[in-house]
Amino acid sequence: MAPPYQLCLVLVIFLSIFSLSSLPTSAIIPKANVSLPIPSSQLVENLCNGKAIQNHKFCLKALSTPKVIAAMDTTQLGTLIMKLGAANAKATLNVYNEIIKKPGSPQALKALNCCVEAYKYAILSFEMVSSELVEDPQTANYDVAVIGPEIANCEKELINAKVQAPRLLAGNRFIKYYVSMGYEITSTLELENPNEY
Image 1 (cartoon, rainbow, N blue to C red):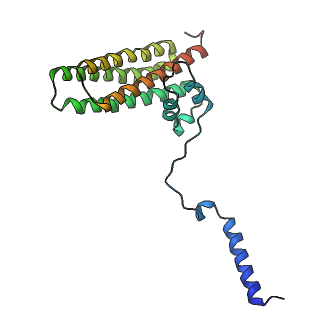
Image 2: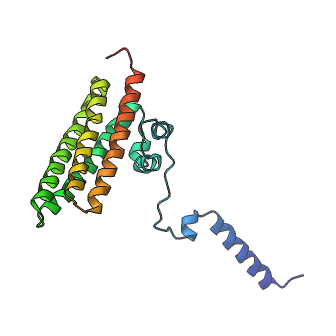
């Protein structure tokens, strides 16, 4: 038979392991500052697989916030997309306003001012579309679609003026992605409610 102190030691080790196993794993493994991707909802999946979507990966990533994933219907998702589009347009507009303050050629200044107007228009359109989604998806669809040509004109002006600004090019690319997402969601709303408009 084992001596009593060995039995006590085995019992202490067993009880320690048993009591630790009932604790949550975060008590044993420290939490790391790593954000895990949030699984997208079926609503987001369907939207990002739509014909109008220019960049599937961007769509999924942009719409992977908990608020978007929790969207219960197409109208809610559309409203959130328009808010994201407006926020993106505002951020890019701020970059344009920063660059305008720096000295440059008159042609570059003209191109930048054209883009500032295009982005002001984009912000107003995204905000307006948010309110139109419920009442008139067809008008919302048109209003989001006409943002694209404004941004295309901005890009043309930048190219003609030989403005080299990667941040602006990225902003223009992203806004086009939001326009495609907006167009897809408003098209979906039109199809869901064909007789109402």
